Length: 129
Image 1 (spheres, rainbow, N blue to C red):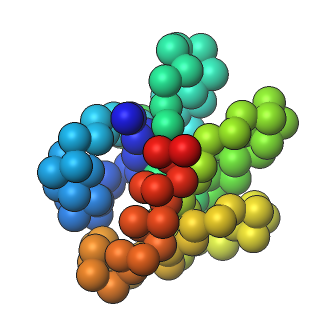
Image 2: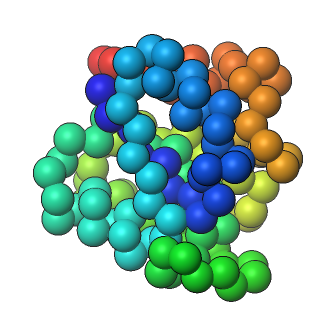
């Protein structure tokens, strides 16, 4: 199983997620911007079983722009192409598409696996299907 984490601060914000996935033998890849995420999902092998998405990501990796909301573009493209990949939203950023996702975690500064474990483990069960 493979999860793509789309977050420009994944190494710090998502350490709990990454560690829990590794314990379970789930491979984790990271994309830090909209363009690299879409390239990975659309043009490379379609072997992504689930996506964990921060809505406030930049267009390009290693770029920081305050109030960037490129996560909507990622979701819009997934819906447009009718990809059936479970998405866990891990963000406090507003979105036009959050309501379409089954799994939404409004993270604070860092993932607390205990605080939202039910949603996270439900997400993991969904990607096993």
